[in-house]
Amino acid sequence: MFYIEGEDLRQRMERLNTIPEEDAILIGAAVCDALGYLHTRKPPVLHRDLKPGNIKITSDGQVFLVDFGLAKLVQGSQATTTGARAMTPGYSPPEQYGTARTDPRSDIYSLGATLYAALTGVIPEDGLARVMDNVELTPIRKHNTKVSRRLAAAIEKAMEAYPDDRYQTADEFRRSLLNSSSKTQRFTELDLNISVPPPPEGTQSESTAQGGKSQISPSTPVNVVLNAVTSATVRLRRRVRRFATQGAWIGFAFLLAAGWFSWVNNPAFRSSLIGMLPPDMAATYMPSPVIPTGTFTPPPPTATTVVGETRTPIPSVIPTETTLPPTPTALGGGFGQLAFVSTKTGIPQVYIMNSDGGNVLQVTKEQDGACQPDWSPDGKKIVYISPCHQKTDLYNDSSLYIMDVETGKRTALPASLGGDFEPAWCPDGKRIAFTSQRDGYPEIYMIILENNQIVRLTRAQSISGAIYARMPAWNPYGSQIAYVLKRTGLSQIWVTTDGDANMDKPNDRLVASPNNDTLPAWTPDGQFVVFSETSADGTAPYSLWSMRYEDRASRTAVRVPIEPLPVVDVSFSPDGYWMAFESWPDATVNQDIYMTTATGANRTRLTTDPGYDFDPVWRPNSQK
Image (cartoon, rainbow, N blue to C red):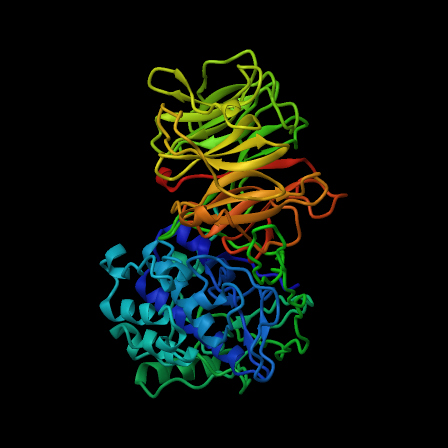
């Protein structure tokens, strides 16, 4: 695979927070060049994963568009996609979710979103949320008033939610970018300038020592590396045209021609150049482009028919599990995080990781293990249980603990002899519901954190045929709890009618099912309750079901199409568009944390450690 040394645009953004307007224009123009080349191939090539991390800038100023692992070759008039697809919320266009068709305008959207983030330091609102009328795109100038109105308008047009409203070709977007600034309006395809990354510590490049930007040489190639599924590597070069007839550039062209290099020719790739080379660097001749001719074929779609006593069958498509996971973000920006439990050190401990599976950090170091974490609403603390020697059904000797994630300060909550477990922090931040065996069998209790008062919330045995209650889950308003009631030999999902201390009012059975239903969770908007289901004898793998709370009178749920099974212990991202869960599709492989979109698409594996990973829970946004 071709090696590219240097920083990517994401790293440059982290280093500078926001990049200069002129650099953003030139980077955008050059990437438009690459996209224009790709989109006009026979067959056309769509990148479909354009984001800051996939634009590399070398130490001598060349720009590379990389990582074509999700590329699509458009064959004829096909109406379906070819190749696995993953979404990076904020950067992916709405049509890239689910099974909608993507085309060159999808890459234009992603480039616009990349430039938006580069100029503002904020990831834009997710495209899917925008077409669902949940959110609006925050204007660029609200984040950064220094950005010119013309450039902001150009980028925002590229990011229109509907493809027909965007630029229809990469060249249109490129021209609009260059025309948005008086500094770039006069630029020819050879007159581009961009600052290079800083030299390694302890060294000083010639251009840096001279205190200015390096200028792109007329022979500077624009390189596009296609890292396709076939592992083929492609470098694209273009023919470089002569300078404009302006006197200064003519003199410079003659100086270069007389001195030390010759022109590079490739008529196929005629778009703008971006990057930087020192003035004394000789011309570089690049190999001719080689485009993969094969196609990427996903598994064929299948229909899932749900059979149940009162269930409604729904069609589904088996999503493709990707090897390059999307990076879900909170709407409007900010990387998401999850807490989870892993036995990677030999005993369960709580960890935190980014929602792309990276930057794993151990939080607890309990001698007897820790598990079942849940976040405080402000995202600063975690409640968990210990001891936890392994994942099990009941924890007879465990107690609740609260830890401040930043300081590591640990506080024990009042314990009982029977064991307290399955904590759920109330959205008001003042209460924690949990399961306790202090009565000799599981019931749901609540602790009021202000005074450590313990309040019993359920009386399971007052309901005909019931023997215990457990697995509490608060709705987003802190007014109700969904929980599991063991009754007539089955685990059933019930909902309390009052979330305060008085729980003697009648409770509602949410779903009528002949199977075992467990682990309820509310969507962040409170409209749905999801839960895992297995057969009455426990032999069938766990599937995920969803029930609209407004339709609870029907007691009818529908299955969420996530394959392969099982799907256990779902946690929703704060924006409601992603789900994390436990799964073990292959019985011979350890259990890991996975994620999908809220509709069940794009199943992605987040953890791969040989240890046993479980209990995922998304960190709230408010801590950012």
